[in-house]
Length: 313
Image (cartoon, rainbow, N blue to C red; front, side):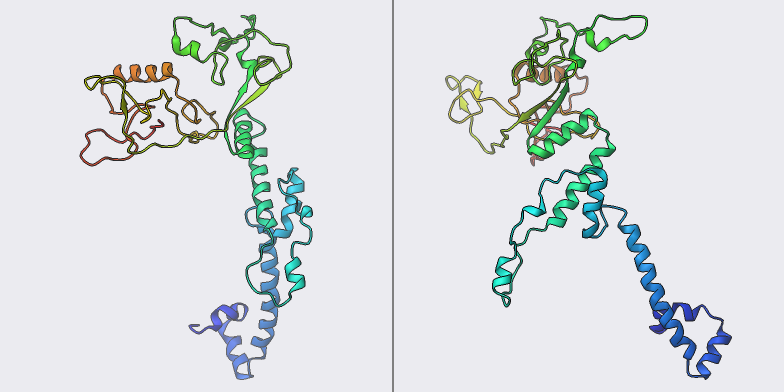
């Protein structure tokens, strides 16, 4: 059929043409009956489809969200029960028109429950804990399992721990510069004191979260100030002439299973790391025109240097 009844008479159109011709000759009572049956069938199909959608937090109805949240053990960041007399203006002025200022609790809870399911699937791994700290605080975060940095007496026959043999090389300035910092990789002896901000880090049961509250900002079209006379090539990046450090930019790590590095957090670039970055660039057989900390942010017309895809400084 080519008319609009093709979508409303799905059951009737399944009948053989013989019965439809006889029904048309009698005034289509069968069509009227099947339309009533089809209406109930459509309602049942919509209910079944709704049950399927309600099994997922992304597509469920708002009334289902608390049940899924209770199933996965969600601790709500925003409790709807704390809203008292949210629609006071609507109750006092029934004829009031305009946008509603009542918080969309359902949407907020949906995001919380969806994120909880995402965390549950990752089963408390260290990258998941790092991402949780980043999402809760809104700051850049780096998580460290301090028992992995303990020096162990090796059991060569059964349980060898090669990563605990990283004794510091005092001749490596960049490695020593990380000592007692968030990205330290040197083995330590056990510290039995309670973990605090600056002590008690290295112990078997300790996991530390390092947070960066400050943000880095780009300085565009800034005229550097010379350090000495006009023939001196050395300059300060700060136009005030103060010895201000350069900061790396905040960016997410490329793999959710990985941990943040010094390239992902907004902190002052260590001179030793910047020196190693340039030293590795000089050792390249084919120079690329950019490094991890140095390069063009955007394509500059007329410049021979390519844009650095991972430039962070």
